[in-house]
Image 1 (tube, rainbow, N blue to C red):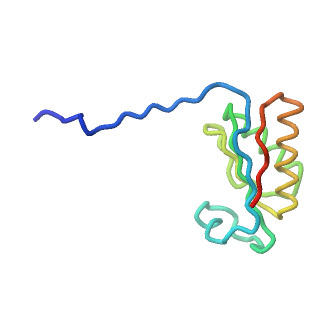
Image 2 (cartoon, rainbow, N blue to C red):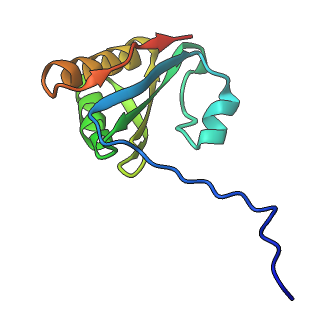
Image 3 (cartoon, rainbow, N blue to C red):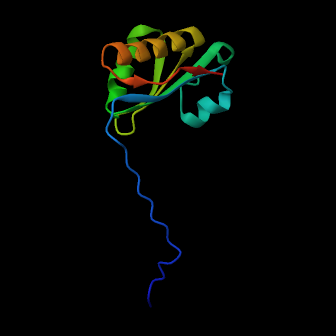
Length: 121
């Protein structure tokens, strides 16, 4: 029996090699369900906590960013993926903001990356 390919969609994903941080956002006081769904540390004071998320290229940069994050504040490394360039950190709002700011500063001033603006909500 012949296969009908007329209904299939082909998607091609590609990334352009570059040195940039394309996304940097802090969620202040996120709902506990977000921690649970992301598999993050549930032993936190949700009222004063924050989640920071970043995306960068080349994706291996997430390793450097995770090192900077844990050395620049009292933050928990929730997720660092050297294949997608995603980094998620949690902690007190001031610590997460400090770590995210230091990552952006280092990548801009020391590594010459193009960085985005840090957003918060």
